[in-house]
Image (cartoon, rainbow, N blue to C red; front, side):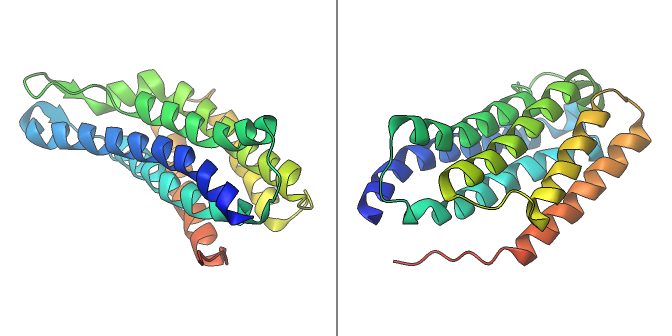
Length: 189
């Protein structure tokens, strides 16, 4: 019954929308104060990845439309991915004062462990939610790639070398490209 799903999807979409608006507002503030912001390409790439995850996760949520009976527990589990993504968005970008000075490399190096931990939680929640609510087989190519991504992020938590982080964000851009090209879900009415 898609009407139940549509009802539940409203709250899911609000969380995603507020989170995306938060990222866009922070980027707007960075643009306003661009002379006082020293950007760091790794940080910018992670911000882009987190923004893209909003779109990807929202779009992929439509696979849950086939579920006819929802419980509060299943809906809560379904909501945990966008909630955690919202937290990652808040941590990924500082509150920018257009009159302040910011070094995004320093900000990133101060906060990457939290960002990585939240991204690992998102990966685990997303895979777990699909397994529990959609009865999907756990050993799929997507889940193996998710496991490698979670492992890579977990390892990255313990290394602060710029080369490691540059390699990781490049890998994740490739993984998102793979997921985007291989995702076969469609939104239909």
